[in-house]
Length: 114
Image 1: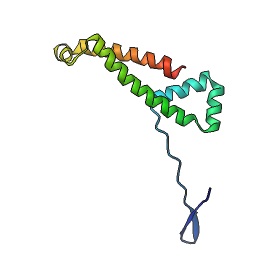
Image 2: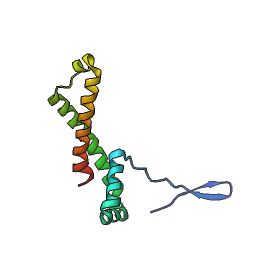
Image 3: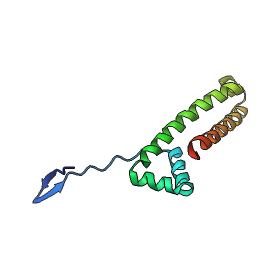
Image 4: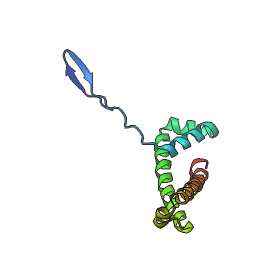
């Protein structure tokens, strides 16, 4: 790794670029917490090898994709439509909350605690 410098006044200042911060959302954070508390050896190994952030980003990305897919499919199966939303908003919100909760439980079991 070669370090370059630039001059400011009478000093040479290294041109350092901070590492890119990982884009980890709620699912990645939940996975991190699970690994940290339940799978300590896996967590430590991934942290030391530098693969933890990439793993957490992947889990977060796939969990979000799965949440969208499951919510769409379950709402179609349950008959939760825009016409229901227009006719009875409270019933629509209740059904969508139940669908989202069920989808989040599936993701928790398959992606977070696996």
